[in-house]
Figure 1 (cartoon, rainbow, N blue to C red):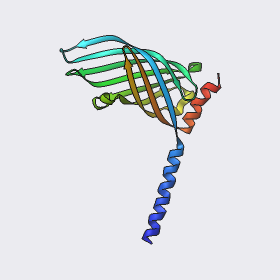
Figure 2 (cartoon, rainbow, N blue to C red):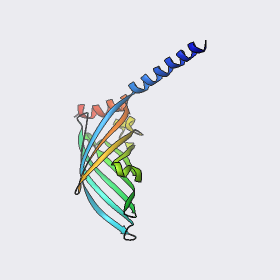
Figure 3 (cartoon, rainbow, N blue to C red):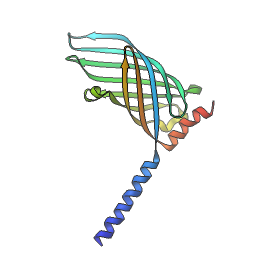
Figure 4 (tube, rainbow, N blue to C red):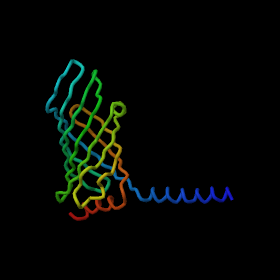
Length: 167
């Protein structure tokens, strides 16, 4: 009896895992841009707060292409970036917009990896809201390249796909 119950629970567990895996789809976004320093508060020789803006373009794995802009703050203590937070706007075709917040903690900064969370989106892509992503970023002088991988619902994927199809 005990063995048959374990098998039953294992089957149920596998069913839910397979449903979860099928319910999520990979959405890949690549962002390129230029960084401009707006203002720095220099507290000491080793501590400061910087405000930056970013303007650039993005493309995704669905063929969408658009513009992006960001407002960034970066807190440095003892010459180590302690916190970095970026508020990003993505402009798709037909004035469709998505906003996300990208964060990197001091532990994440060393590896160049962080997290995105979509906070506000246009109604056409409403199911993208609250989707989270992992991103990596590389810098060259005042330019950067970021690539994110998001696990989004099939519905959000279809909504994003329809942007390109409705040109």
